[in-house]
Image (cartoon, one colour):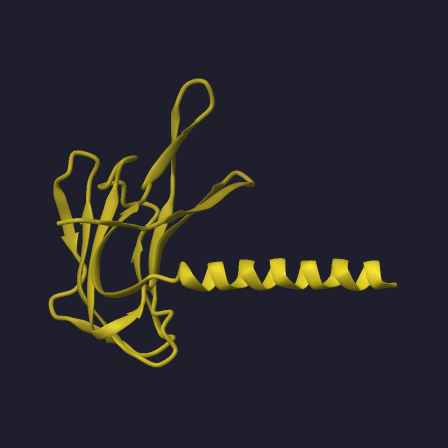
Length: 155
Protein backbone atom coordinates (compact mmCIF):
# COMPACT_ATOMS: atom_id res chain seq x y z
CA UNK A 1 0.00 0.00 0.00
CA UNK A 2 2.82 2.41 0.86
CA UNK A 3 4.44 1.64 -2.47
CA UNK A 4 1.20 2.57 -4.33
CA UNK A 5 1.01 5.84 -2.42
CA UNK A 6 4.61 6.59 -3.32
CA UNK A 7 3.91 5.86 -7.03
CA UNK A 8 0.81 8.07 -6.90
CA UNK A 9 2.80 10.89 -5.31
CA UNK A 10 5.54 10.61 -7.96
CA UNK A 11 2.92 10.61 -10.73
CA UNK A 12 1.20 13.66 -9.21
CA UNK A 13 4.50 15.57 -9.00
CA UNK A 14 5.37 14.65 -12.62
CA UNK A 15 1.95 15.77 -13.87
CA UNK A 16 2.13 19.03 -11.90
CA UNK A 17 5.60 19.75 -13.30
CA UNK A 18 4.36 19.04 -16.85
CA UNK A 19 1.36 21.35 -16.39
CA UNK A 20 3.58 24.11 -14.98
CA UNK A 21 5.98 23.72 -17.89
CA UNK A 22 3.11 23.96 -20.40
CA UNK A 23 1.82 27.13 -18.72
CA UNK A 24 5.28 28.68 -18.77
CA UNK A 25 5.37 28.20 -22.55
CA UNK A 26 2.41 30.52 -23.11
CA UNK A 27 3.72 33.44 -25.15
CA UNK A 28 2.60 36.90 -24.08
CA UNK A 29 3.00 39.58 -26.71
CA UNK A 30 2.10 43.22 -27.38
CA UNK A 31 2.12 42.61 -31.12
CA UNK A 32 3.46 40.43 -33.90
CA UNK A 33 3.97 40.09 -37.60
CA UNK A 34 2.80 36.61 -38.63
CA UNK A 35 3.52 34.72 -41.86
CA UNK A 36 0.76 32.27 -42.83
CA UNK A 37 1.26 29.84 -45.74
CA UNK A 38 -1.71 29.41 -48.08
CA UNK A 39 -2.33 27.36 -51.21
CA UNK A 40 -4.69 28.49 -53.98
CA UNK A 41 -4.14 25.04 -55.49
CA UNK A 42 -2.15 21.84 -55.09
CA UNK A 43 -1.08 19.39 -57.77
CA UNK A 44 -2.60 15.92 -58.10
CA UNK A 45 -1.82 12.77 -60.14
CA UNK A 46 1.40 11.99 -61.96
CA UNK A 47 0.59 14.68 -64.52
CA UNK A 48 0.49 17.43 -61.90
CA UNK A 49 -3.04 18.63 -62.56
CA UNK A 50 -3.90 21.69 -60.46
CA UNK A 51 -6.64 21.11 -57.86
CA UNK A 52 -8.06 24.51 -56.88
CA UNK A 53 -8.70 25.29 -53.22
CA UNK A 54 -10.71 27.91 -51.38
CA UNK A 55 -8.66 29.62 -48.69
CA UNK A 56 -9.93 31.01 -45.39
CA UNK A 57 -7.58 32.96 -43.15
CA UNK A 58 -8.75 32.85 -39.53
CA UNK A 59 -7.48 35.11 -36.72
CA UNK A 60 -8.55 34.03 -33.21
CA UNK A 61 -7.95 36.27 -30.22
CA UNK A 62 -7.11 33.76 -27.49
CA UNK A 63 -6.97 36.28 -24.66
CA UNK A 64 -10.01 36.03 -22.32
CA UNK A 65 -9.70 39.60 -20.98
CA UNK A 66 -8.10 41.85 -23.59
CA UNK A 67 -8.75 43.00 -27.12
CA UNK A 68 -6.22 42.92 -29.93
CA UNK A 69 -6.11 45.17 -33.00
CA UNK A 70 -5.39 43.70 -36.42
CA UNK A 71 -3.56 46.40 -38.37
CA UNK A 72 -2.78 44.58 -41.64
CA UNK A 73 -3.88 41.51 -43.57
CA UNK A 74 -1.98 41.18 -46.83
CA UNK A 75 -2.10 38.38 -49.41
CA UNK A 76 1.00 37.65 -51.52
CA UNK A 77 1.50 35.39 -54.53
CA UNK A 78 4.21 32.78 -54.99
CA UNK A 79 6.54 35.43 -56.47
CA UNK A 80 6.24 37.64 -53.36
CA UNK A 81 4.05 40.20 -55.12
CA UNK A 82 1.27 41.80 -53.09
CA UNK A 83 -2.06 40.60 -54.53
CA UNK A 84 -4.56 42.11 -52.08
CA UNK A 85 -4.90 44.11 -48.86
CA UNK A 86 -7.91 42.90 -46.91
CA UNK A 87 -8.34 45.77 -44.45
CA UNK A 88 -8.06 49.53 -44.92
CA UNK A 89 -8.23 50.47 -41.26
CA UNK A 90 -7.38 48.64 -38.04
CA UNK A 91 -9.92 46.06 -36.86
CA UNK A 92 -10.35 45.37 -33.14
CA UNK A 93 -11.09 41.84 -31.95
CA UNK A 94 -12.57 41.63 -28.47
CA UNK A 95 -11.59 38.97 -25.95
CA UNK A 96 -12.03 35.47 -27.44
CA UNK A 97 -13.34 36.95 -30.73
CA UNK A 98 -12.39 35.80 -34.23
CA UNK A 99 -12.44 37.13 -37.76
CA UNK A 100 -11.85 35.54 -41.15
CA UNK A 101 -10.95 36.46 -44.72
CA UNK A 102 -11.97 34.35 -47.72
CA UNK A 103 -10.45 33.68 -51.14
CA UNK A 104 -12.66 31.88 -53.66
CA UNK A 105 -11.68 28.48 -55.02
CA UNK A 106 -11.69 29.98 -58.52
CA UNK A 107 -9.14 32.66 -57.52
CA UNK A 108 -5.72 31.17 -58.28
CA UNK A 109 -3.88 34.51 -58.22
CA UNK A 110 -1.81 33.47 -55.20
CA UNK A 111 -0.43 30.29 -56.70
CA UNK A 112 0.92 27.32 -54.80
CA UNK A 113 3.29 29.50 -52.76
CA UNK A 114 0.71 32.07 -51.66
CA UNK A 115 0.90 33.53 -48.17
CA UNK A 116 -0.59 36.07 -45.83
CA UNK A 117 1.18 38.60 -43.66
CA UNK A 118 -0.86 39.56 -40.58
CA UNK A 119 0.13 42.36 -38.22
CA UNK A 120 -1.56 42.91 -34.89
CA UNK A 121 -0.96 44.78 -31.64
CA UNK A 122 -2.46 45.23 -28.19
CA UNK A 123 -2.30 47.84 -25.45
CA UNK A 124 -0.71 45.37 -23.01
CA UNK A 125 0.83 41.94 -23.21
CA UNK A 126 -1.78 39.36 -24.18
CA UNK A 127 -1.97 35.72 -25.20
CA UNK A 128 -0.78 35.56 -28.80
CA UNK A 129 -3.66 34.91 -31.20
CA UNK A 130 -3.96 31.74 -33.24
CA UNK A 131 -3.65 32.64 -36.90
CA UNK A 132 -4.03 29.95 -39.54
CA UNK A 133 -5.24 29.32 -43.05
CA UNK A 134 -7.74 26.62 -43.93
CA UNK A 135 -7.74 25.26 -47.47
CA UNK A 136 -10.59 23.18 -48.88
CA UNK A 137 -11.60 22.02 -52.32
CA UNK A 138 -13.69 19.37 -53.96
CA UNK A 139 -14.54 17.95 -57.35
CA UNK A 140 -15.79 14.67 -58.79
CA UNK A 141 -16.47 13.26 -55.35
CA UNK A 142 -12.92 13.95 -54.14
CA UNK A 143 -12.19 16.48 -51.42
CA UNK A 144 -9.04 17.95 -49.97
CA UNK A 145 -8.76 20.01 -46.82
CA UNK A 146 -5.90 21.00 -44.54
CA UNK A 147 -4.64 23.86 -42.40
CA UNK A 148 -1.43 25.86 -42.26
CA UNK A 149 -0.43 27.52 -38.97
CA UNK A 150 0.97 31.03 -38.86
CA UNK A 151 4.51 31.67 -37.69
CA UNK A 152 5.87 34.83 -36.12
CA UNK A 153 8.47 36.61 -38.23
CA UNK A 154 10.44 39.82 -37.89
CA UNK A 155 9.69 42.74 -40.21
